[in-house]
Image (cartoon, rainbow, N blue to C red; front, side, top):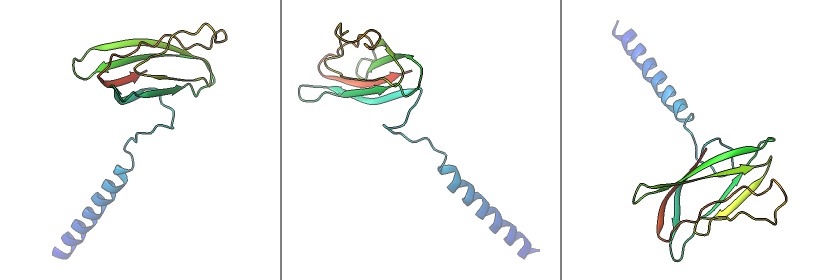
Length: 128
């Protein structure tokens, strides 16, 4: 009887260990080269010597609209803006300078106005 209980306890411990090992593989990973529907840039900094460069690409084959929010970490204030990206269109900008609407770009390719951030900004950017 004791041998049977010890055997069952051993198998149970082995099963729990196996579940824990395989459960760890299902965790979400952070990446900068895979597409996603919610983009999070957890550290956006603009100081005298540092400026964050942000790159976003529409990897789909249809045009898409993006709603973005800068969140100030010190004051919990938000600054929001919209982007319109055509299919497979990349765009980038410096957080301190933002991005102006460019009349020189072909029709439909300008993603829209991105407001500049003040100096000494430390916070995040979330785009949906």
